[in-house]
Image 1 (cartoon, one colour):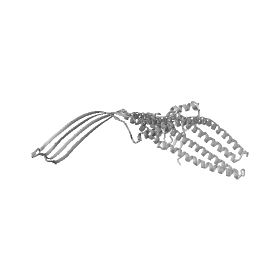
Image 2 (cartoon, helix red, strand yellow; image 1 turned 90 degrees about the vertical axis):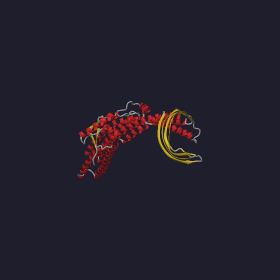
Image 3 (cartoon, rainbow, N blue to C red; image 1 turned 60 degrees about the vertical axis):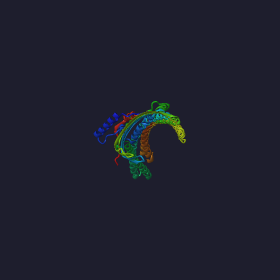
Image 4 (tube, helix red, strand yellow; image 1 turned 135 degrees about the horizontal axis):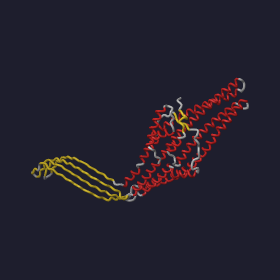
Length: 472
């Protein structure tokens, strides 16, 4: 299970608050800052933490069925009653007051209870499953924070290229109108430029909305408003994962994937539950030991006459009883209306279901490791190829603009070349973020993702590259 350092979280939060107060409104928050806030503020991980602590009690609850049960009872009774009776020989008219104190201690110890033993085994499996589930939730938090952070950077880069594209097309439109006014180009060139500019303006508006939504997603994780983030530096490079062999990652996944471990512990717990129900028809032997002490005191006041003799006055009485017992109890179910057999069959089917779910989880985990590994390899190649495509698109734009100046190219060619350049820039930025997320997903499926990956990735961020939320 991934363990978070409480000391590191507290000190990191203190440094974060101090830096925020000293740096002013333009301070750039980093991926590590957002992550450390999310560890303590994200409601999803908080709920997962509480669920883990609740599920971790399963082993202790199940173990209690094998341990002695000791109880102490005490009672006090104050009883008053009147008696008025007569017969052929006597007549009685009396008030009786009695005080009774009772103390008892009882001990019960199972001696042979096979279902309780398998229930204890089930509890241990559920406890281990809770640990694995919480570790998976911790890894998922790392991935959710990373995706949310880089989605902001992705949206910001898209907005920047859209704005630049709109400005460039606007300048081209103005130049085209000037050329049209002096008779150098036909009116169709103006119409073409206007149509492209209108589309660029709409794309810019959409990208700004996407940027605001991306910033708001960070607020869902931390509960705070974030306005300025640090951008990803140009020196960041995409490298192939180590080891490069997909089967090695598949092997890691089989041995370390936390979701797969959860499925295994669920399977083991279901098997123990089936055995517990299977042996419900067996006898159960238990030892019971007890000690009981009763003290009673009372008085009787009134008259009692026997054939003319009056025995009036007050009579007191008392009693002190002590007792101890040892019992060996044998319980053998004979017939329960078919309930035990139905429960046994139900538990057996649930065990088969959990086993098949584990098999499916294992196959899916291996397939995910291989496919995500291939995605990482592909993204490495795409980053390098799309970096070169920017150079090619820029060169093509310059050549097209030169041809337009001398009349060998028209305005449509120039607009297409401009859009190709900005499209290449957006593709390059998107591919870098795709690479980062796919690499983290690969580590997650292999059970290797940890907070260290956040801090290593955070080192590539540059605070001077300001990613700022628009105010309007």
